[in-house]
Each structure stands twice: as C-alpha cells, then as structure tokens.
Length: 259
Image 1 (tube, rainbow, N blue to C red):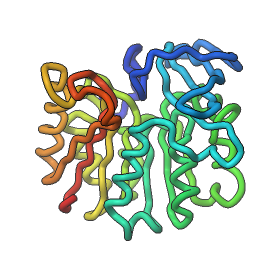
Image 2 (image 1 turned 90 degrees about the horizontal axis):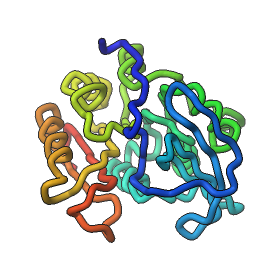
Image 3 (image 1 turned 135 degrees about the horizontal axis):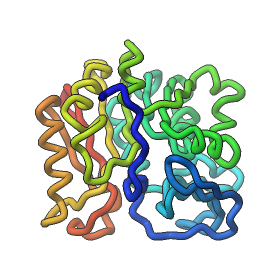
C-alpha cells in the first residue's frame, strides 16, 4: 500500500486556510486532483499570482520586480526559521520538498541559499504543468539552478522508497488535514522520513490545527506520533496574530539532535 499513489482528497488540498477567490482568472481546469484555478489579485501587500485547488489557496507568488522570492505565507517563513536552526547545513545542504504547488518555496530556497540543492516531489502532473506556465518552476528548471534542482512527479512515500539519498532538510508541504494516519504522517511514513534524514537533519511539516483548545487535538496527536521517532519536536503557530484556539497553519519541526 505504501507504493500506491493516492489522489489528494478534496478538502485536504489547502496549504492555507484562507477563504479567498481568484480575481483576474488566467487559467482553470478540472483534473484528477481537483479543480485548478490560477488568478491574480492584491494579496498581503503585493500584487500576486495565486494557485487554488478546489477553491482552496495553495500557492502565492509576488509579481513585483525583485520580489518573486518573497514568502507571502507565514508558514513558509517558519520553514526559513527552521533552516536557520542548522546554519552549517543551510549554506550547502541537501533539501527535499514534498508537495510543490507553485514551487514558490523551492525558488526562494535555492536563490537565498546558493550553495544548496533541492529535490521536489509533486504528485499531480497537472499542477506541475501549471507551475511551469504560471509560477516559479520554469525558472528553476533552466539556468544555473537547474543543476541544483530535481523534480519527481510522485507522492512523498513513493519518492522516498525509490531513493537511498539522505537530506539535511525535508519539508512536508503536502497538506494532510486531519487525516494523518496515512502517508508520510502515519507511523510508517515518519519512520521512512527519519531514515532519509542526516543525523543533524530536520523534518519540517506544514499542518493545519489549533495550537490550544478542543481544535488542537490533531496537532497534539501528530506531535506525539513524531516524538515516538524523534527525540525533539516543536509545534509552532505560523501566524502569531491569530487566536491559538482556531484552526490554522502550524509548523512542526522534528529532529534527532536538540533544536
């Protein structure tokens, strides 16, 4: 079962919980992985291009000159904070991004860490094609960065089963919502992920949960599950201006060594 490629369940595709709609629609299509829509609008102080899947916001890329690598999602800025916890690996490390979306974070990572390398696994061929046409992927696959970037059209479990490579950073941006008993966030997936981390490596997960209160149960369960395989786990609220009682993007950082 671990080798099987799973379709993204509807209502589990959102990288953020923001109920936005695209304005100035550039492209839309129905796929096996949901309805894709690309549009442009003013978003968080920037003119931005947005990727939606089944109406849920997946990626946002700033369009102003010199601003394309700006991280518009707070949880992606948390990803960057995690990288800075390992300064030696940050300069010239190997990273894996699971769930590419518009590949905005991959673009940012390789530009801001010019000695680093990144592999990426994205399950949807249609999202890959959309990212090439409208987002950062075509730039990643050409020029100098192409030598430091490798893309696989596969889910995270299948990708890890097919490689013996180990990483300094593994970023799980394949949204799993409440269903964390399967795939990379199940026990088997976590063990598999740990086996592909270097000793100083970090596993960084985007996960929607509340931080406190009754809606925090999914996050607390996932943290407990990670702690069975990693001695050190942090759960961080991505946007600290929001109430910790509401469901929102949080980031879990798991490590073999102290954080």
